[in-house]
Image (cartoon, rainbow, N blue to C red; front, side, top):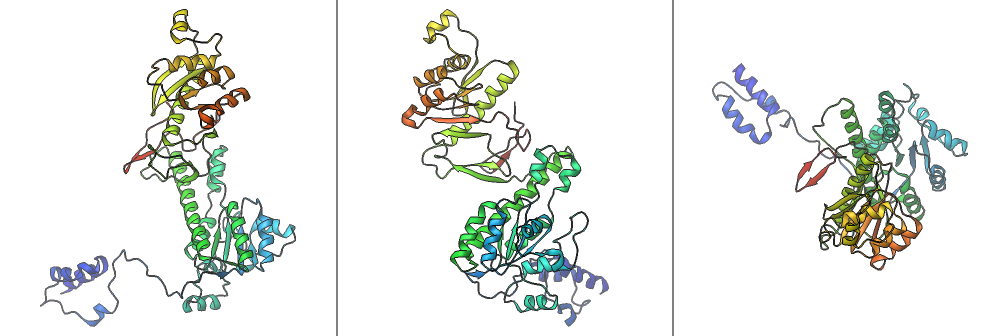
Length: 460
């Protein structure tokens, strides 16, 4: 009976409720085990049971903002936002350097340390990790138990959170050593952001300077309140931010240990919409930059599609590496992500000049592209051009006479840019590559197709 009872208890503890009845028959003989009322004193729950939602009153669209907590490392437009909060009658809590900046501007601020009763400690590592902060963010308004806890523990509700995170990615990009990079891993910021975003029915969470104007306008339009739509939108952005931030930390940390990551999470930011995907009916289509980084190029003219940019980035890698290896101007002619031709600026023989109908006195860039395009002129019809050097007027004049979709190069002379911008009735795509760009994710190129993720080494 003891063994059977132990088995039952073990079953109750570890098995899902749906499998409990059959488990009783498997482990407990009816003559040896008598079920007592205490066996059922608690509801059955599995080890992986998820928490249920606490009691919550009907959701409101407009929620007044009465108290805000501000803790930012990027103080751009901080005083503009603070002035708007003051105008709306919103009390401000703040920390460290943020509080100092606000006080110096003559704004009323309560230090978080004075509110919690605990000083900032451990070199600033512990300042907002406190129940009076997180309770204020997470308390469900109108829930009797939560309201009582706030009263009992003197927790003031925090209706707005303005936080941006320690500049971890910037520290890594600047070549910070291991200890400095670790110190720039934010702990309290993500915790507050997630708490505020979770409680978005009552809390407005702001995580980016670009969101200030929208929130200021809404506070003015609604008498110091924000709408549910805005709070949900900001909460979604907040969760995206913390996910991307953690992904950057995890990726960097794994690389420091010289290990291959078993789980790869990459964060992206929308850069701009594309004309279309592989074909014109495949819309929408977008291009994203890695979170915290910029794209390795900028569009000077025209609106590229998906294949245009694949051609541009792949052809640019080819000509850039060729120039670096040989020290000679290089060019490529790409069509649907494949090179129709690639060449360097080696002088033409008389026979080649005649065969290519080449203009006289070609510049190195023009010569390299003429050679690349004529490697297979039929396949190069409607191509994408890539040049390792700045495009000059001679190169532009040659391109003007050819059927092509676009070009990528490290720069353009004013004359060349004027000629190319007029091509295809102004629709010719001109892209300027960033010569100094270093991939923030290292030398691995990631690509996802049909549910499969590929991670080959890039950069040649």
